[in-house]
Length: 210
Image (tube, rainbow, N blue to C red):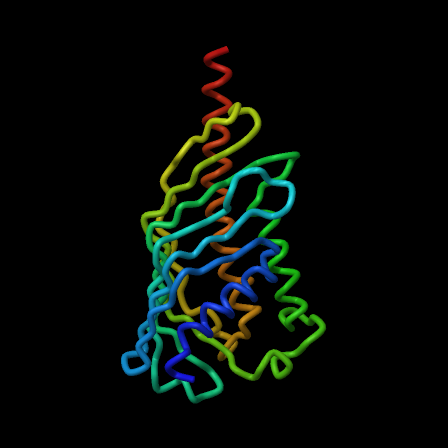
């Protein structure tokens, strides 16, 4: 099982990620060291929900993960650090809605189905294991803004560093669905803020040109 752990993680990320976001999620490779508790997820790509035209919502070259190896056999797995480096994000606005707003709602619905917030299943049904993430960083990201008013062009703006702390700590461990919902909500709100600010700038520029 340890020898095939990387392939198992890749399969879970693609299957559960696609189901939770209702997009096509792919991952090229997982490098994993059982001894040090370190992993690298390489070549992640998330497509867009139905109704959006751009080829993807998000991609990044690598995600590094550091796990407390002493916690792996316990009920609550402690992840010391997750770093998402240089993500390329597309914020698409079409038909009165943004792609990341739709993705966030999809993840929230999935979390409720998996037991977060009084859904159909409880934590035991989800598999028993819970998670705590001490630190999660999103660094050096860029957001490409796409909307009909831009006539096929994109505006690219930097994404400020995102730092989330103590995910699941207050609850003494959160289910995978709860973690996914909390992380996606925080990241989506940051992306939406950057995207809407970029849209406002574009509208002002177009008005000035007119």
